[in-house]
Length: 71
Image (cartoon, rainbow, N blue to C red; front, side, top):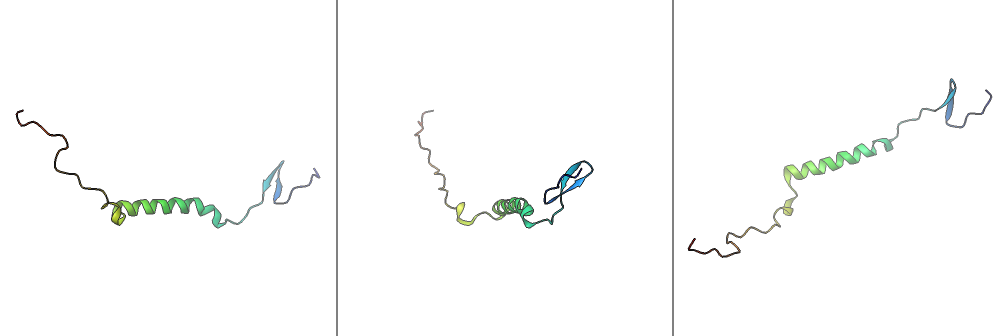
């Protein structure tokens, strides 16, 4: 069992295991992006996005097709 163990690994019983590493900020990037997206969505639900809702044209009260008065 004198096989060379690659760098970054150590031998545990009969198999190789990766050496422990420090947790980097890169691991949190997925959760950070998900949190930001959820925050923006929640902000839009609670406070709205300002002029985005005011740009919709109001519904006209007059019907587009003329109805006959005899019915």
